[in-house]
Length: 120
Image (cartoon, rainbow, N blue to C red):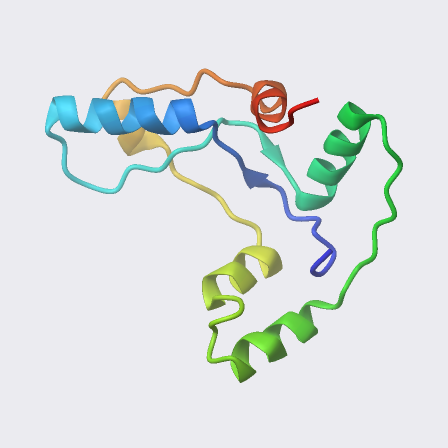
């Protein structure tokens, strides 16, 4: 895993993103609209959820984030973008107020996202 992978970040189901886009188009709204399920999970937690769902044991190996920073720099950020490194390094918080102003709410939980992502 790149770094500790301990920062919780928002996740979103593709159906909820599509519904947000439709709301934006219908309302002919302008601005910045964030999408987030309201539930947060770290990469490490995602690995745990997936392994539990698949009933598999996993070995987590933490690769120091500095290695990814070096690879990014040396590849002119073609291998991994600066934004991806920032997401791995710092916690992320999304403001959903603009999305909620146009009467949008996410409907899919992390469990539903996981169920639709994994084909068991």
